[in-house]
Image (tube, rainbow over all chains, first blue to last red; front, side):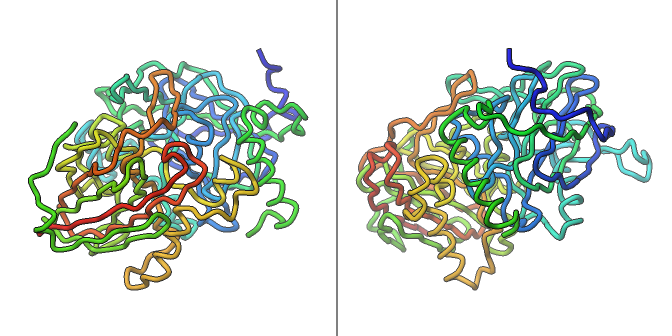
Length: 250
Length: 212
């Protein structure tokens, strides 16, 4: 067992709750930890990352998976931009498997799976979808559908069989499960709590998320994520150059 | 699934050989059939598709694999857009399966995957950057470069969540054929990668053919 929470410096300086089926965004500076907590179990958090100084640099799921030879995401994995840099590293995880290939729900999928709930009739109990939720948050920063990429789905597990068939694993995340992301560069974080598009639940799942922010402890010489593979060591070198020569900008 | 084609190369209305390291950007009209032919075997054709009338609508790897319930592409696969529309159908395939999880090589990601000093070796994304720069009529930029298909590439996913780059299952003369269900812009980078054993460190030409 690793030295639990040694990557944190002090207690959370901010804590908030996002209800199920909603969206939000924030910029997180490097050397901070974002903790996501699945309050009730069965949550899904769709998430995308951008470099606020140059939003053409964005989270790249294929680069992330192939350089770490993984299909699932858990502690020790780093989340890469398309520019060979690390937005954040997964420093803690009580869940064990997070998805980044299932994509996000859209209006037609939600209507087909769970029906339609408009705002006029249901007010904030309406059914939002992941695609539109991403677009609303992206538009706040001048970004749009062309800036969308394959997203993360925290707390959701999609596994394959030997033939490559995809299955949604029910019960992957329990009440209180968390994942801790240590940001390695300044990052625009776009997220929503809409259900995973493969969730087989009969009713539209509205699972709330608690998120907390911490200062990160200085990275130790034997940092688990940095040394999880040689690829990550090189990713951290790319980040160091970014910080030293470019002041975190272009 | 192995499905062979009845189409004859002599009837094709368009044929072009694409050397490794080059791009090909071309409009394929609705109901036309596009064949991508692996001339010498185990080559990777890194391919993107856009709706010709609105390039903001483009191939979506994640929607495609989720809706078919399988991570591999082959005959019978419907290639979906980010807006849920069918862009092309894979109507023939003599290779068996194709990857859409591995993405494309880029000079920056090569530094992570292989070595920092590989940064100036030619990569697919540089071919795409040149393609969008030389084809201003499409109004595209780096924003439009999304997650692609790697035709002829073998990237097995394991049930315990691993992902590997395995020896190719393609061979000289194997091909995949796609029928366009809308007018599409096809953007191919014939992969120049010299560091990946999946092409035996030897990138080779492909050929594209189109039938009406």
